[in-house]
Length: 501
Image 1 (tube, rainbow, N blue to C red):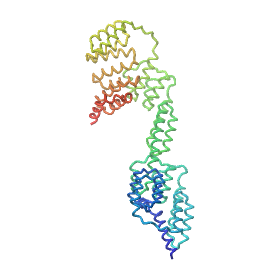
Image 2: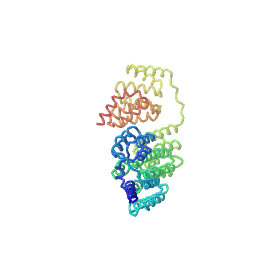
Image 3: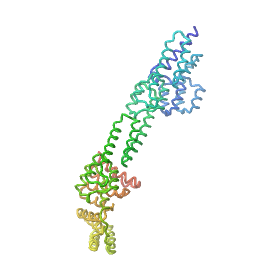
Image 4: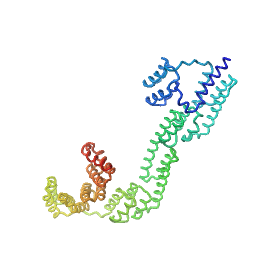
């Protein structure tokens, strides 16, 4: 009779350990080994302390138990909580034989060694006539083995798979599988909240969150690589990289859209005339989604079959999706196609007059500066600095339209001078032609993106247009170039906040 009682007690313990639902297991007091397992699974100290406080422990806080926890590296706060909860626990009397068998079988289940677990449970079953509980555990172990075999050899878990395994696999075994195989996609906070509500063990949820973070980082790197390859025109490699991203999350529709966009651009480029490019072909490339960086490179590599870029044609290209680098590439190619002309030498006297005029501008003596510019221009109409000086003087008199015309004359001579493009943008800003001003600043920054002042001017114009976040982006760029501007830009950032409200 005593042996029968011992066996029944062991079976009851077995049922409590293995047959109960995930929710029950989650609410049950902590065994000592499980605390150590949580710590090894990188559960943070604060979280582990809260869990111990909420669940309690199922062992007394004996010196040996506390020493074991310290040796395992459990943090002091968690051990202090064990001391509080362990005082309420009565020491357990060991059940000879059956308890050891159950502990061994539980370890096999945690390791996924189901045949070994079933063999041990069969020994337990042989010790009692009423073996329904043990048979239930054996059936569960056999079902767990069948479920694991149904998984693809190297397949990642879907969140739906987790639901199938709940209550069949032990939490420790399920955690191990998630860590080894990974999961598909990046679980949202809503997903993890659903799992928590369903009673999924904390260890499983933590493993899922970690794998999701790994997926997010890996996917981000793959998308950046694919974008760079796409912009270089390496279409097949870009598609191959995105296919790797699909392995992480096959259900991501945006990845499929990106692949389709790349294929469309690849098809458009394959139909190009290999000799030269025309405005019509450039428009088609833009509309089919070929990146601006790639089109700019194609323009540099091939000839173009038109000799000028009119305002109307530039507008047409921009409406098709052309960015500033495409326009600059066309302008550079057109300049390179012009026949070489020997420029007339600038007279030294004209250079001297412009230098004097620049000093007059610094002293705000705008009439003297205007006179010096006029004298320099009588000596050479091809001196861009003289036209620039004239524009500066006229802007000092607030004759913004006349200043704009002078800057345009200077740019006809030297279109690659970023400072003149910037001054032209300032004149347009003064005329409240803000969109054109931003375009002028963009051309200046295409030539010299490291000019912090131009980024600030551009931000001021965007702020005047109520484009709050774009203005902030320009000020941020200026700060990246020179962090000492933080105090200077403080009032502008305040204006951005007011603009956004």
